Length: 241
Length: 241
DNA sequence: AAGTGTGAAAAGTTTCACAGCG
DNA sequence: CGCTGTGAAACTTTTCACACTT
Image 1 (spheres, helix red, strand yellow):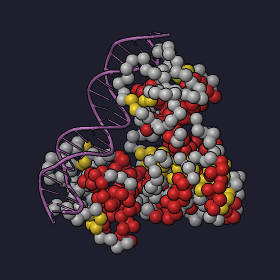
Image 2 (spheres, chains in turn purple, red, brown, blue):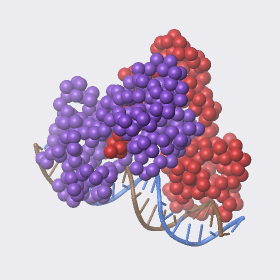
Image 3 (cartoon, rainbow over the protein chains, first blue to last red):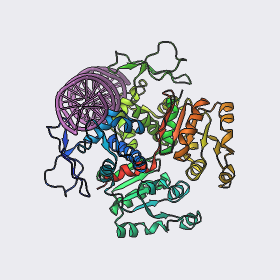
Image 4 (cartoon, rainbow over the protein chains, first blue to last red):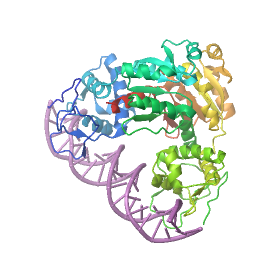
């Protein structure tokens, strides 16, 4: 079996036959081994990869060595065929008749997702929700560390008893530039969200996890992921009848 | 122009010609005016409807009377063709050459989304994140009211200075049954999330907004909407390189 | 002229079903 | 036999393009 190189410079394994999937220039990146085929991966598959990874971590803890697509899929709440398809985008990791090696698979997913996970993350807007996120253990658990927070009123934010240093928002640019921060959690009020986003973009931030109920306008190169709490509840209420 | 009936008992307007979209038995509901055609609406369109509604509210405040698909679409961050398609699922509301009447459109969306919005919502798990959500103004702004919270340690939760009454989790069933609560925000630790979900399902809850990083297993009739914070950050990090 | 409403095409995603390997 | 890997089919959602209305 051809094993895809699994390591810091992770490269998707090649298919043995001409792939039916469309190939794509893929995620922009000038540093690729020249004309590497990059597979067009459904965006939703990336979400699922994170879920698989969580399930695999539990299996690793339990000392289980292999897992079949059907049982892992069940744990993740998807169909087994979908799980297999998702994994196949990145190479061949399973053994027919047996299943997938838990540890290897976990490592491969971590490499696919995790490259940037050691990057510093900062949070802007340490108010009610922001402060809760700073205390939230889930980010750490998945390998992220929020290294600093910024707020218009840092004193008030510090009074919330946080572990993370809270600076005045005017220091935002300094820190972001100095530490090369690329990921930001944005929890400022909607009214100022676009303004702050502009400042973040200007100093090189590449990804924004946006909790403000506002549609941010940013250059294509910047990724925005919206988490809109009220919207989620509204969506739920539509289907509940 | 045929105007769709817009009112509490909102019914999708019929198309004048045979629709190209597939029709569907649609969202289950025994109370429909007998064999009403229900259009198969993309799930994502419902999310967008909420966004349109927010934008429209701003326009109403500004006293603007009509709006074109292109300008509303721009504010919502979508293509104008998509906006028109989304609205067309529910009837014909626009005037060719002119645009959509802001107020009427806002009302129609509210009726589509809002039917259940006056239902009571409760929150289970008033810890760090849960307490922040209880203080979060966004739900109120969109017309939801969290009427009660439950926690294993209600004293600790009350100490967080919340406006909402916090009861011991053992009282969950009583309150949910008594008030006919159908929507729940679930913020308990992952380890107990499934157990609590089972209890909620058992007493008739129909929708769960789940913040626990766990895949809940529930009957098909129960809608679960997952908001997985760490997962969102992980997803972002994949695209940021 | 401006701008909706909508078939039809394109794009994206999931599911099926089975060949083939261990 | 059991289970993966994967083309092909099915399905869903988005985008296009233009007829048509005001």
